Image 1 (cartoon, rainbow, N blue to C red):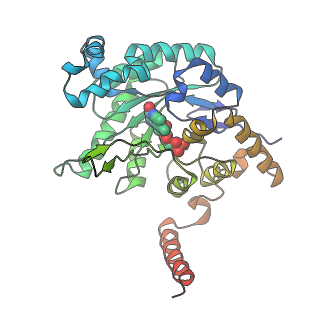
Image 2 (cartoon, rainbow, N blue to C red):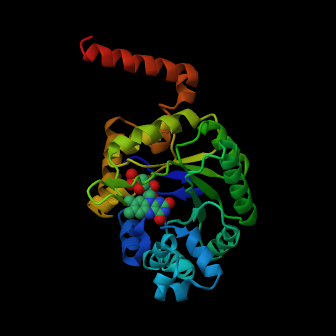
Length: 335
Ligand SMILES: Cc1cc2nc3c(=O)[nH]c(=O)nc-3n(C[C@H](O)[C@H](O)[C@H](O)COP(=O)(O)O)c2cc1C
């Protein structure tokens, strides 16, 4: 039996397989099953900034009863109380989760601008969270907003939050930055202890018959893993930080790839929604078998084996890979 232990954000975990933030963690019984199946840690579903805003205004209860009085874009937020029980309910659930589980419980805040973030970060800490994940979900849709402004907003937010709590804070990032390595370095400089790569953006579809925009939330496939592998492999060794991969981890082989890229942990949502949280047990067994088959004693032995730090000049390698891929595609196409 190989040793699956890993560390993440200064926490000692029994397995690198961690439950990613999703509605799977809204239920205490489901959390118990995750622990039983061998989850290394759990990231709770998010408390959304918009809910904090309503709670701060003292309006949350009122508007959940009188949704139609809210402007259209805010109505879904009032209804989301059912999804995460509002700000107070979130803290109560976190407290109960901590009392129920012995594995680390990571709180999650989701948004991009609110002044309420630091206060809720402190409350999440007080409710017992072992760490806090900031999901900065912002799509700069206006043409006057510059990349610099967006990056500075991220940095300021992370600095505000990390300076107001003692628990470690990680940042869940989008892949849409001009210079991911640079923003990663600056976020770590602002106090982030870990990076969670990457947020998935849910892209609404068009219903052309009814001329409507249809929200869609597709589950991932392993194909989405490659973007994460590439960036974790590129950042490993360049930036002193822990890294989590979220997006496209479905099999034990996916987990091995993520570890070889240099991730400390692999976070899963879609695979657990598809197969149930008990699937974590199977993945832990398969990861163990894989390590045994190839005579590795522990996950720490394979961590970073395929990172660019191990392999050489990252920019030159990226260029060479690009050329190779194009050349192979041409050969396969017969030209
Ligand atoms: C139904 C659903 C709900 C989610 N809710 C949250 C959330 O509240 N906060 C968050 O940070 N991520 C949320 N996510 C994103 C997941 O944590 C994860 O990052 C993403 O699904 C990629 O991982 P996967 O490929 O394993 O699904 C959600 C994902 C799904 C499918």
